[in-house]
Image (tube, rainbow, N blue to C red; front, side):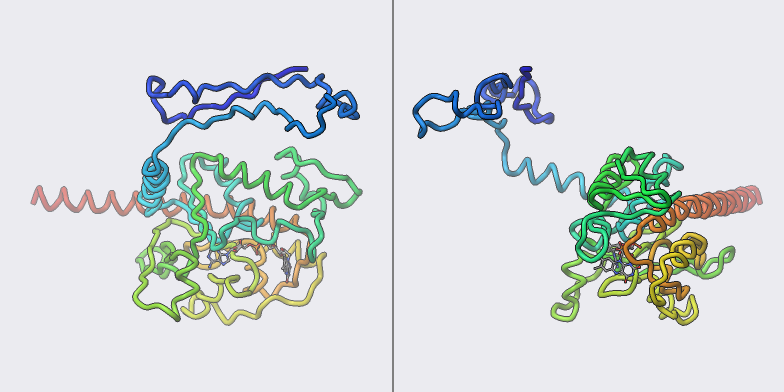
Length: 351
Ligand SMILES: Cc1cc2nc3c(=O)[nH]c(=O)nc-3n(C[C@H](O)[C@H](O)[C@H](O)COP(=O)(O)OP(=O)(O)OC[C@H]3O[C@@H](n4cnc5c(N)ncnc54)[C@H](O)[C@@H]3O)c2cc1C
């Protein structure tokens, strides 16, 4: 079988401006040629030192200016920052729970603007591996429903399923989240604090997050005057994972602010109890903040979950439904407040 491999010119270049060499097409690959056949080397020419020829030998990229590369990135990033300065939902933490939440919410509410803030350069949290440093990901039934939906293959072992490599599930989920038009991932960015508002309807509620480049967050003790950025949101979903250098960030902050009681911390491991409790307890913990994933175990004193991931995905999906309810409630409150203000203004004008 033969197929062609083409060097595509950059989409942004006007067709007329494209130089001819950008249109170079690599030669069609002839899969029947001796070099592609098992044992084909014996059919090769006698000259053993001749370089192997490939369809990529005359490959040339379309030209680009360095400034164009810079503007292509920064213009989009700052447009996103501008747009998400007032997000509908902010998800803090892009681990298994956060990504599942973003995926579910992007489907449930295509009108909602969803920002994910992830302190690490690489999103995915602890879901790139199974337990310890092993590869396989174990999911107890019926948690495999999300694998079916995403067409992630697994081995069915009866009460549980096994994905050959945890990274296969995480990469697939991540690719769906990143393709959703209403989701923006800001990685290498840490949630440093929360915006807390006092309002007449909800009382003390979470109104957004305070962020900084993670590298800055990590160096506040060695530098001075590095103020953070702020993103407002109608709902914040926190999925920062269990306690650690960065984990359980929101829960710890809520406790310091006196918005929740003292946090008991994660209890000893019990997979059977842990997974059901995480899903059952996924909820709005204070007005404007929904908690999901292992961060919940810190506030509820639930057992460690260990390397079984169904509860993380299902908790994230449940959090999406809770967050949507909170979002719609907030939108209705804002609409009512706007109507009252407009009515007041009309009355003042007519007086
Ligand atoms: C080394 C290791 C240890 C583990 N230990 C346990 C354990 O003790 N108990 C247990 O039940 N399971 C443990 N697991 C299993 C499993 O990985 C986790 O339970 C599971 O990943 C939790 O999913 P999550 O989505 O809640 O949080 P995580 O997968 O931890 O994801 C949280 C995400 O939030 C990000 N984040 C955290 N703070 C911030 C912040 N302030 N701003 C922005 N982003 C932030 C993190 O970078 C991360 O990507 C461990 C896994 C690994 C690899």
